Each structure stands twice: as C-alpha cells, then as structure tokens.
Image (cartoon, rainbow, N blue to C red):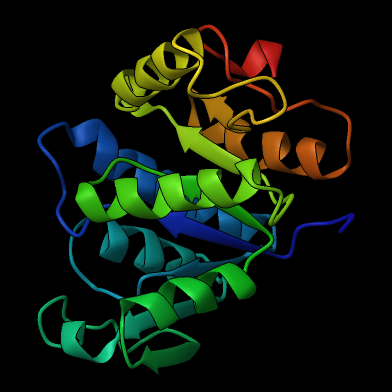
Length: 201
C-alpha cells in the first residue's frame, strides 16, 4: 500500500466535556474531505461520531458508516452517508471497518474507542497488518494511554520485536501528513518507549 484512500476514525458517541474535542472532530472531517479521503466510521449520528461524519459530508467528502444492527436505534444511525453497512454484530463491524480502511485514527472517546484502537495496535504488534494507527492527542486526551504503553515496555510486557507501533499528532492539521508519510515509508512508527510526539515519529 503506497497511498491512503480511506481512513477509519474511532471516536466517542458523546461530545465529551472539552469543547476542543468537538472542534477537532469538525476540523478533521473538513480535512478528510479536502484531502479526498473517504471516512470509514461507526455509523452513528451522535457525539463526535456525528460531528465528524457531518463535517465530511458538508465539505463534499465521502462517508461509509458501519454499524451493528442492535445499535441502529441506540446510536441513531446517520442516514445521510454515501454508504451504509449494517452488520450482525460488533465483531463483524470491526472486521469490516478494518478491511475497508487504509489507516486508523483515534479521536477522543470512551471504552469502545479505546477497545477498537488497542485492537488495531495489537494486530499490528502481532504482524497482522502494517496500516498506520494514530492517536489524535487532542488536549492531551491520550496521554494516560501513552504513559501506560511506556510503562508496559518498561516492565517488559512489550518486548523487543513485539513493539506497539503508533503515531501521535497533537493537532488536527498534522494527522493526514503523518499518515501519508508513514504509509510512504518515510517514518518509523515505533513508539514503544518514551512519550512520543509527531516530531520524533
């Protein structure tokens, strides 16, 4: 894979307390549309998910929403997207999102966002894919996870040869360039040690 055409974004079905999270979702949606990148996301209309998808659509971009049947009503499936995929369960949803995407970005979110992001990190660690995984560290939201990963490496549960590869961007404007550079092979995404930043990816 030499180019990115689709970006899977994990994020919250709520807005969070910090207004910076909603602003970041809005700005990133515009960025994806302007860069000609299709959004693949969880299909809901609420919270950051809805803000992100509507922003992509409002700025002329394309959106694929993938949602399990039991969440169609609960997360109020966004029906304005270009492509709907309704799956039988969460496992199928996550697998379909993986298959449809060239890169993964984690905006702020809750347990679902964390679980999906860590799963992509684990699959990367086990050599199941080489797609970039990026933490959008808006207002230091992901700093506790970054610290935990550093601690795991320090305790040798993340060992040499089994590193958790990921990128970190502090600003929305940095996300797409970081993903494209990683895919092009110009950057190493090994962030297992220390507190990572975009400058030392």
